[in-house]
Image 1 (tube, rainbow, N blue to C red):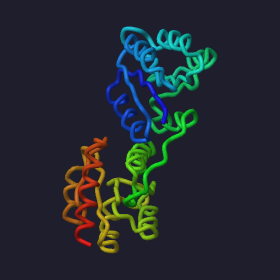
Image 2: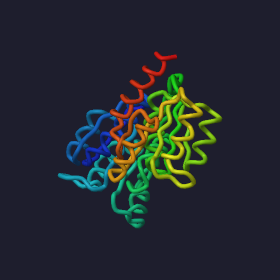
Image 3: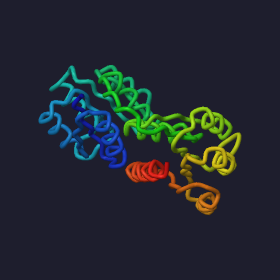
Length: 249
């Protein structure tokens, strides 16, 4: 377990990182502005810092200078919402462990964290979940969320691959994006719901797909979630569904 400090004013990014890291067994502290971040660094003495470069009250560069001076051996991963290679080179030259774009998704950040702190081993998987989603960033977020909750996770990037993997692994739950290349989620649902009657199918829909998502309920799906999904709600939906499926076996 590592002590990790997140200094980030975007509540969505801050909370998502906190959830993933705590589920991985780490101790997490968070601050929403630069001044609070420096104070938290002095109080928490973290093993690693995730630092947003654009912060209120004290800029990311100002925070970096203060915490790097106080703890030069503590790795600092700098996040930016505006790609600037030259600025990245400056941070790295002055001792930052990494300079990452938020546009690359949280999976990239979490992978980088794993370079510096050993992730905790997940508990034995109570269920197998197949995620069929062609958006790599969304697939990565869903995969990490469910894997950190202890599930065995399989991923597919298109409908045909989803069908093949579902037949091979017979998952307990399938998360199906409605629009995918090769074969869309509705077609996959119609095929697999007949072949795998013990599997639960949860559709992933954009706002414009809600009518189709509701139609999927009539075709065998047990529920649908909008994009981007609320991760705690997603876990609750899956946990409750698994409870019902096990009770019926």
